[in-house]
Length: 116
Length: 115
Image (tube, rainbow over all chains, first blue to last red; front, side):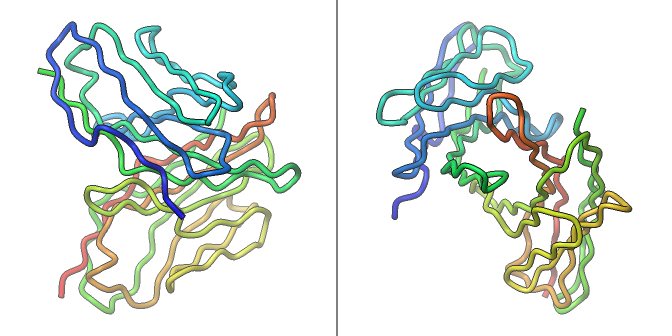
């Protein structure tokens, strides 16, 4: 079955612009989470969506936002881009099974954002 | 809060050498533990997991045992191959209010295997 698909894979923006990244989860997965990966900070949790609702949010400024659609596809948006937003943005989806314990995440290949 | 500490890399080995990547954690509850691997240009892939104390996760020759008494989950492989060159992430996941499990990742350890 198809994996987690992220688009675009690479993009270059300039400071002050905004960007929207897209994530299509594995069919049947209702939880989608987003992470920022940088050499300096490692993997940091941005937010998680489940059934179109933001269920958890990491410690990022309000410039970072997201949403999830009824088909579980998710988008994240970063407004007023800063140089420090340059990173690999990873999306992951999971299938929630009640009582089965922690869910395994399936990651996409990421969207590499460069801010000039 | 929860945290994961991994040994810093890069770890450089010759092919067929023994691999150990140390991982220790701090958690308030009873987390599940994971190792994920990231190959160049790709996202993370689950390598193995363990959900309770003394569980051993294994996959592709890699093993890790959930040691609650030492709060550790060290990754081992008896004989590494060049194709194992990647970045390895240790992670823990504990249930949050609201029902979700948001993992806490270590900083990652780069493994370089030479022929």
